[in-house]
Length: 436
Image (cartoon, rainbow, N blue to C red):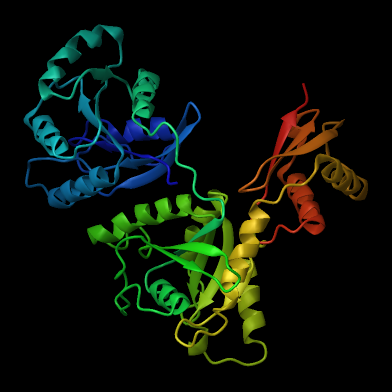
């Protein structure tokens, strides 16, 4: 299931982006004391008390006729529509304004849980000034300071109370996969070709598919799949059509719900820089990945074309060296029959568990081949390794000092594990932990 989503909304210059950055734990939104700096929705992942969520920062909603205000209002309304919980941010320094009341009226219509965060309450003396915000009719105001991190914990404690208690478990025998890629790489055509029917509208206009559409089917082997088509993802800042930016969040939620993600490339256009960023979304989420090169029928080929294209992919997608590659054509249905079996294999690899005794034999053999590194005369010692999770396979290596586990040596251990076990198509996570 997709992670719950929190939208941060409010009029301009009340500190929404500062609060967003504080919750996300990193500077993602531009913070500047100029109204309208954050014009588009910005997304991040957050976590509080073990609950993960998506976070949306929005442009300020205002009553003025300033440039971009209509667009900003629409962006915020889209974020509100997408959110499970909404945080309305107001300024404790300025009190209730007409714009605050206007935003509150928009939120009344959302039928979503709304929490009121009074920002810029930087010292205890200012807490007595927050009571006027009861007039907005949104319940108890939460005094916070995005700049100093005050009151954020109390606010998030209340936020997660509105999340579903337990995410429903999906049926274990259903494999869920999504197709992601830039607009017009042929995702919808691939779905139609796989299903053998016109399930999704197809056109040559980039961005035709606006929403995620789920379709179930059973392969010849009897495996049940649920396929999630996503709107084409386009680089933020180059496209200003509002629904295009909305599609990015839809795609991120589709990735959350997927076991396996098909990263679709356009053979005619080759590899673009943003293809790598799109694939990174799935890699960072720990999903199984297959790289699908579509429109393979449309290019001139010789005996070396496929090998050269594969070399380009391996060069440009170095972090996806574990992902299998399929060269297909939605138009001619070339090699499409391979995809269900590939997806099933990758899904099985994502759930593969290795007995600790066998795993430790592999790790000890790896250390014998390539001794552990030293730093300032101190050598890394590996005591024990165990697998602690699947989807993606996650291994904890107990060591004498975590900082001695250099990235390059962790990557070496990962490669040794891959040589010994079938982990094609799935990322592997290795965590160094000091033995107590």
